[in-house]
Amino acid sequence: MNRNRIPIVLSALVATSLLIGASANGQGLSAEEQQFVKKAAAGGLAEVKLSELANDRASDQKVKDFAVQMVTDHTQANNELKPIAESNKIPVPTKLKGESEVAYKRLEKLSGSKFDAAYIKVMVSDHDKTVSAFEDASSKVKNPALKAFIDKTLPVLRQHQDHIHQIASQTGKS
Image (cartoon, rainbow, N blue to C red; front, side, top):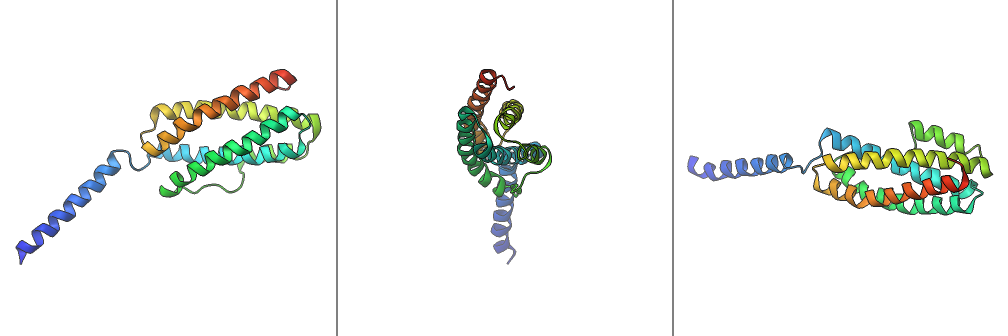
C-alpha cells in the first residue's frame, strides 16, 4: 500500500516545486512591481478623468485635441493594465484620490484660458513624472506581462510628454 502512495507524493512534490519555481522566475509580482501597478493604474485613471474635464472646459483647440488623445490612449493603457492587476489581486482604482483628486477639484472650478493654463501645467508635470517612473520600471521589472505593458506604453507616454511640452511652449502656459 505504501508503494501506491509514493507516485502520488512524488507528483505532489514535483507540482509544488514547479509552482515555487514559476513564482521565483518572475511569474508573480514583487512588492515593487505591485506598487508600480497601483501607481500606473491611479495615474491612468487621473489622465482620463482630467482630460474628460478638459474636453468640456478648455478653450484652446490644441488643448481639447490633446485631451481627446489622452482619453483614448490612457483608456486603452488602463484596459491593458487591468488584467495584470486583477491576476495579481491588485485592486484597480475607480475614483480619484490624493493629488489627482485635488487637481480635479481645482480644475473643475476653472474654464477657458485659465483652465487651459492649469490643465497644461498638470499634464506637463504628470507626464514628466510618469515617463520617469516608466523608464525606471522598464529596467527593473522582471514580470514578463508587466514588462511588455511598460515597453508598449512608454513610447506613447513619451509622445504625450513631447506633445504637451510643445503645447505649453506654443501657448506660453507652462
